Amino acid sequence: MDKNTCMKAAEEAMKKGVAHLEIALQAIRTGKASPSILSQVKIDYYGTPTPLPNVANISTQDAHTLTVQPWEKNLVPIITKAIQEANLGLQPLNAGDQVRVPIPILTQERRKDLVKQVKGEGEKAKTVLRNARREANDQIKKMQKDGLAEDEAKNLENEVQKLTEKFIKQVDTIAEEKEKEIMTI
Image (tube, rainbow, N blue to C red; front, side):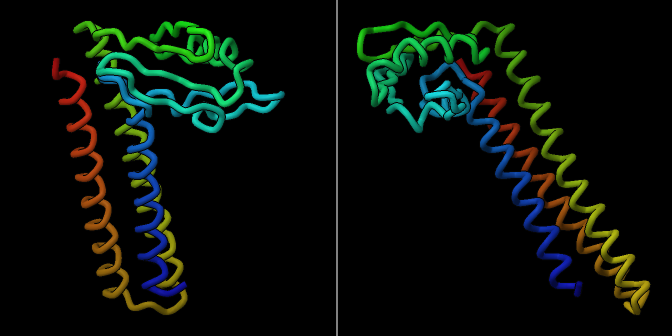
């Protein structure tokens, strides 16, 4: 492995960590109706756990109501049950051929719990970044044993550290924005 490949691998791993954080934070509700709240819900579709967006259209009816329109009418009770069991704090309503999901206004206590959840997701992302840094530094040590000059290895380790710090700032910014969104009434 050469220097460029090592840096690219570290950067790709870090980008994936940030992307995963963004997806995880989309599922945390903020008191406003957003179809992404239900994107992680899985239903039993003919024996296969299937993401809800793959079997239904999820849309916002108004600022505090989601509408789930399944492509097969027989899925309405299954979807209703799956949303209840998804531990999102939502109470879906079976409306015949669709499911209505009222989004309750968040209490201050629930907002604080969600902020803790956001911080936890941020820490998971930072762990991914640190693991990518460690793997890159291990590769640099291997390259050094294979003949890479010591000063070049130190420079490369510094570049990896700068890259890590850049992505940690991104994670902090993303998490802070989500916390502000949650705490805004």
